[in-house]
Image (cartoon, rainbow, N blue to C red; front, side, top):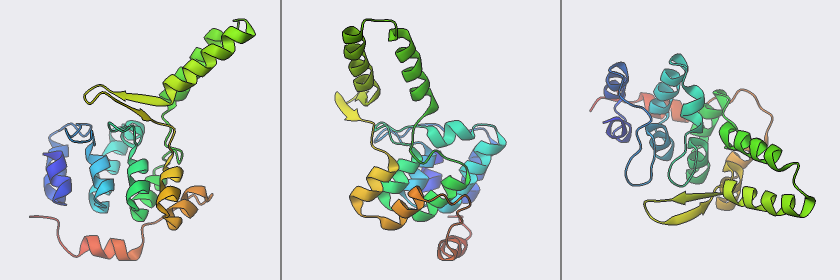
Length: 193
């Protein structure tokens, strides 16, 4: 229901579902998107605003902006790949990690590296390579496919030639507001089907 509300850009249904505590981290079957991923993919800026605001109010913002789909992409990765400039700006206003890293991955890395620090050098180097490979790949058990997860949103935007997103991701700009065109486009209707 959450995904359908986002797909249809139905703000009132989305608000009702959130009010009734529907799971905003439910993954769709096709690609493992959460409703936030879907909002980013389809450029549903108003739905994204609602979901981010709800996440912030319920102290789930970190989980909301760092959740991964089955390709190990965060919502920011999806925005960068789909050229969703206004969604990128909105996510950046919520202090999303521009690199798309999840804190837990780095914590795991640091713990593993500390565990092998005392090994002899040759053994330690071999183990480091194994750890980096493990952290740099994601295995999709459903499809039996291994994906690299080192691709950052910046890599995706650059590969696609989305220069405005590249510029935004490498800028030091703190406050990024969606463009007026996007705001007007999303306020033309009331969002109710």
